[in-house]
Image 1 (cartoon, rainbow, N blue to C red):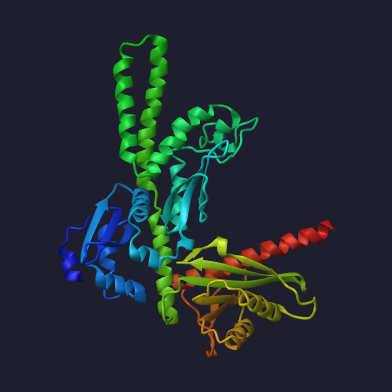
Image 2 (image 1 turned 90 degrees about the horizontal axis):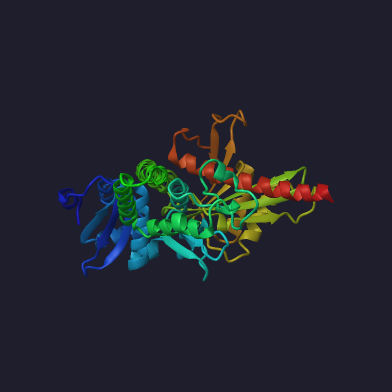
Length: 431
């Protein structure tokens, strides 16, 4: 398959899912896109900088098919359902199963919950796998505007806050029964996540036509009630269309994936980093000192892989550099997956400390340190990047996608470290 061959295909510019086949007619990869034509062509562009596995996949493609849908959310759900059905070789190879995200509906709870998880157990109903957890989160946020599910797990005396703003029907406070909640929210939500939007729309249209036909023959009281229901059903149909058309769930994940590629180019890395680890230290004059390790996979925060460290060396025996060294030593004493890139918060001193740990363990892992320049509290303050073996730091433009990713990792490591430090400090103050 060549770029010229692809240009002859009538690939639409709509959202949808695309499927790559090998010479045997087997589906080897399934993807999704906000713009099918642009996404598929991007695999064969000269500027594409694929990892070895993806390059091998592209070389094997002999046929391409696609399914168009009306919205990005439907493209995301379609991709997930097709991956679950066909289990394509390269979807599994390019993404470790542990990184897949799922939407779970916890049917065993008194009030069924809807949330994102990476763990699958025997209870509940799961939808996925989703390559992008960020896109999955944006999806359930948007879907809630169509099917206002409740976030409470048990009934209570009063309806939750979201009932007041129209995002919950009040099942938590007894405004509607659990049977009614299942009928109006959970069951249609399950159908939607299964990719049966057309069936939901058809059911609504049938009910609308039936009410319109019966309204003329109904008594005044019945007509008023039916008219209210008719208005409600028409609103549901119009709201569903609006929400799906306006939701942008793929662009976020695609941006993060592109940021990783740009970072690999900027650092001249041997491959696009799938796993990036960020480190930071938090303490007050050595007291309640802690370290954090955050993990980003495919450009997105993977909170299930985060780790926190309570510094063991005594107060006054080490500075931030010594503490960072301890955290890295303890990290590599574990059998956690090896990172493709390490980012530490700090300057040359932190960089050299981390480098010594890697060299002593003979770990050829790319490493950078990032520190603020002048105007520490200013959003426009330049960030300086330090690299092993380079005397001068690098300053990237504020608009650089690579810098955006590095800063996201640094800021998340800082947030996680500060949170743990404050937790320990509040415990100490309580004592």
